[in-house]
Length: 92
Image (cartoon, rainbow, N blue to C red; front, side, top):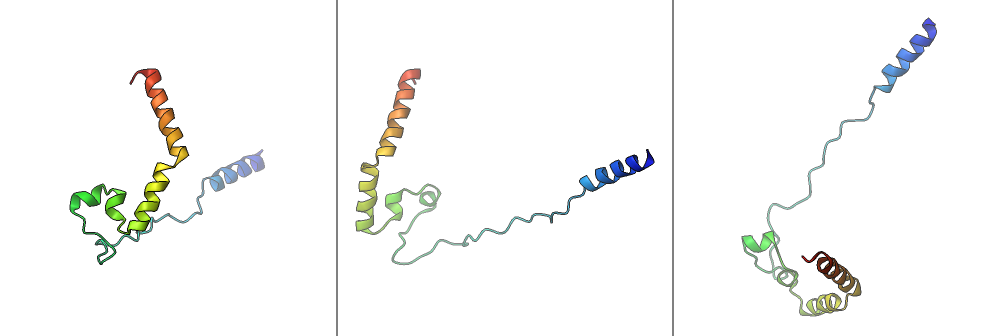
């Protein structure tokens, strides 16, 4: 009986041990200032908080590709149709 209680006590004590090291969240690699140069448009403080993709993308060819992708995105159209259907169903 004593042996069983010793084994039970030992397993209870060992089950409570945490051998994992304490987690320290790493510092994010975020630069203190925004990059500057010819490739980066000049943005105000309000633009930085909520930038639009057209304000950030400077290259005209890349803007055309992104605009075509957004216009022809069938998944996005299906998602918008689903949202509109739900709104119509609940009369929102």
